[in-house]
Length: 233
Image (cartoon, rainbow, N blue to C red):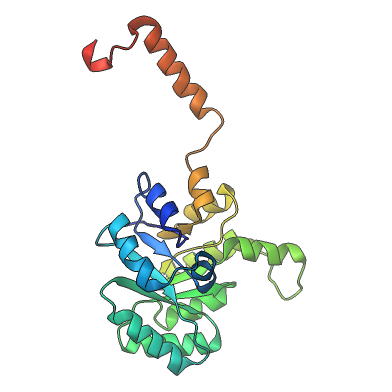
């Protein structure tokens, strides 16, 4: 089943968008939590209250070495919430992921910029992979000779193809979106989860022709029936 996440720790935004979006939960990172000045002890119960008991929350470790990352992950896993531990897919992070999976901790490998990076994280047992779509696009645009130049959606599509080919039990959860073109691109690539910021959530139901069409329907109805409702007509 497809999983949709909101990439924020702003509880007002979560409450607003959860009214019309079928959210599986939220994704956070150290910057998101710091920018909202919200700790987990405050955030977790509020997210559960807004989204429901089955809300899944992705929380990133901040330690610098694998043993310390593992300790963080184990303590996060002990909390009475559905938490997926986010780990940057560095050499140290992937070593920590292997240790975490031996203790059956759910893991998301984050900060993925290349196909090979994500594939290695998948082979090491990550449950989710988070390619940074817009950030990859920005690097490609910069002309760095060390980048393969396929863009964020291309990285996601190639990574999804490898996962399908090797039947790996991992979900792609692309992140970092700046426009709907990127969102539609990864959806067409066959991903089974995404996380979007609140401003993209608004755009998902935005179109310049939408409100005029609704207004026309209402005007036509009221011209003939006034304030009578359809079931009363």
